[in-house]
Length: 223
Image (cartoon, rainbow, N blue to C red):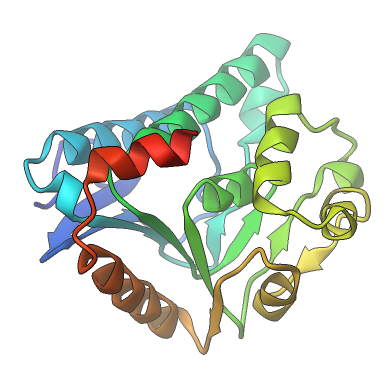
């Protein structure tokens, strides 16, 4: 199943490859999260969820170019408080969609994932990352923003060691793939973008082979 809905091909594509769905943020830009991109991603997940094979598949999310996602589109949002609230609400809805998806999910991080972009990556069950370029980066301390409570709830769920959370949040550390593996945030570090996607696909196939009930999987994830 390829995503060729008019207007969305420039933002993201959704393709079915056997037992895998590949969701790709397209283009060479920074993939900053604004209402248009968030709506496109949510639309893609809705179509995926309605596919009859969804509960026996795995989702891999990846991106073209230098960035996985460079976070919120702050140039758009900071012109008014309601815009920032709108983006936060839209991202939270996207995270909820991922948490409720009836299949395992893997982020193949092939570039920088900053702030809200890091939240997007961590909303997946597994994170595979290239070691030669890119980092996970909670930039809020450096750019003068207070992290939303729901961001911290997700970080507590995904980064169990409080010292590692302090490193990520209070020191705004730029975590390489190997840093992420050491801290338990990243599941594997790979040599390059293609290798990261290939490793994600291998993991995805192994998860599909377990033949779990996707709705049970989603229920346990929500718990």
